[in-house]
Length: 74
Image 1 (spheres, rainbow, N blue to C red):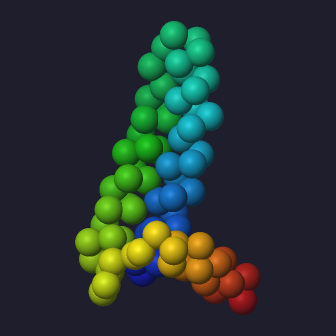
Image 2: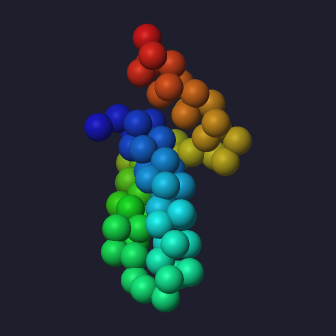
């Protein structure tokens, strides 16, 4: 897996875990799916950061995500 793709998928999974975790917190229950999404997203982001050639500065993240989206569309 390309590190740009890993970073993008990891960020999307981490963002998608938010509503599940919030719903579980509001119902006073453990949201295992939300926690799993958050852990998987964090692992993908950390893998992309550590295996990338130069890491990812915070300013380059939107450019990387748009590049992955452009590859997906094209």
